[in-house]
Length: 115
Image 1: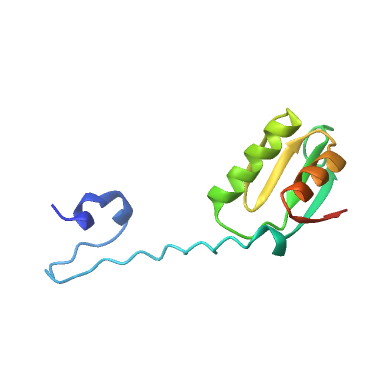
Image 2 (image 1 turned 90 degrees about the horizontal axis):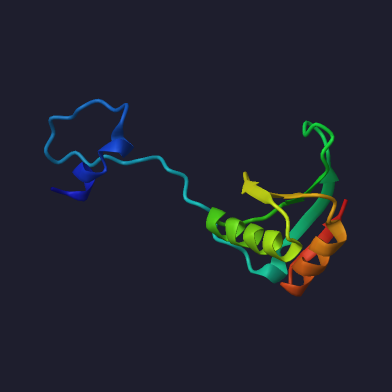
């Protein structure tokens, strides 16, 4: 069984082809390579909109793969001792920890801007 047949879930919603030479191609977007830490400028801001008054710190403007974003989010969460999440190129950390996050990111050689 070929790899193409094994990944049948990737082909859901497509029409069957009787052509034996048919090569199914997905239109998955290739992720952008992660820039070196020195070339990234991360924006740090405080936010409480749509969070029932709870304050969070948002780190945005990360350019790179989602796995690298999740690694950075895990580092920030463990160093700050709080919860959070990462999605859509943003890291959300619970609480107003802008100055602490700025120090951590600068030690990791990121450039930062407070908003």
